[in-house]
Length: 128
Image 1 (cartoon, one colour):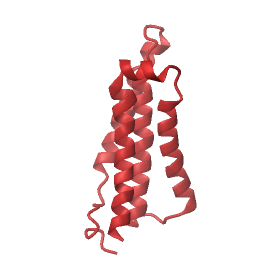
Image 2: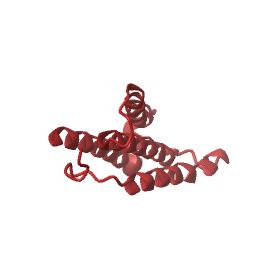
Image 3: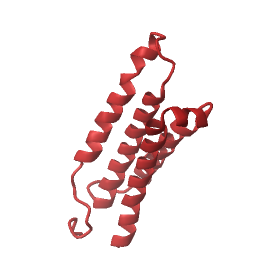
Image 4: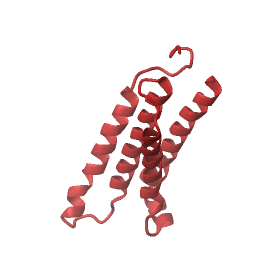
């Protein structure tokens, strides 16, 4: 199977950057919340959403390229990461207010996670 003919390259710099940025975003607010100086944990939620989404994307990309063996266990982990990514955002108290106050971390990051994962799956289906 030719990896270049699919249009998907076997590089993972973008997903690794997303994982690092997600961890940094998640950790950036923890000390302020722990000290009681800030009650807003939206950046932590956005960071965790980004981390789980990037892990799912990376696993799906490796599975599609054939770098790893496609197994039910890996697929379950991918789906679990996507579900966790969305559940972290959607299972908040007063989601509408939180979205109005922090549209980037509550709206834009989860939307990008879903779009990139869906684009990767769509690209797989059209390549076959």
